[in-house]
Length: 122
Ligand SMILES: [Zn+2]
Image (cartoon, rainbow, N blue to C red; front, side, top):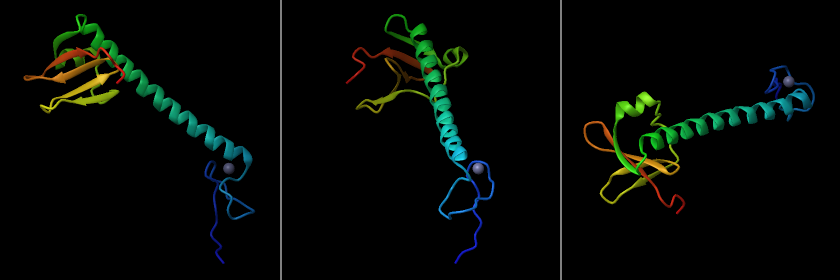
């Protein structure tokens, strides 16, 4: 028989009673799941915000459906290259990154070609 002490996953209080309990109380169990949901929603909100901002930057620079922009110009505008909605790799091995309908592909000398995906879904 084990005498291992168990502690509440939420408040770290020692748990008394049944050994399979993970929380000291119903309150802590509810809090734990609520807090987890808040963390996930905050994270999702942040990611959505960054991707929407990226899309906005790209569409502001790319008014004609196709253009070139230097990397510094994108970074100055606040572009975050770590976040995008999807990636498209051509047969030639070029990689297009999309933020919804707005995409970019790296050219030489830190320039990017900005493109718009016409039929976004599919
Ligand atoms: Zn607790």
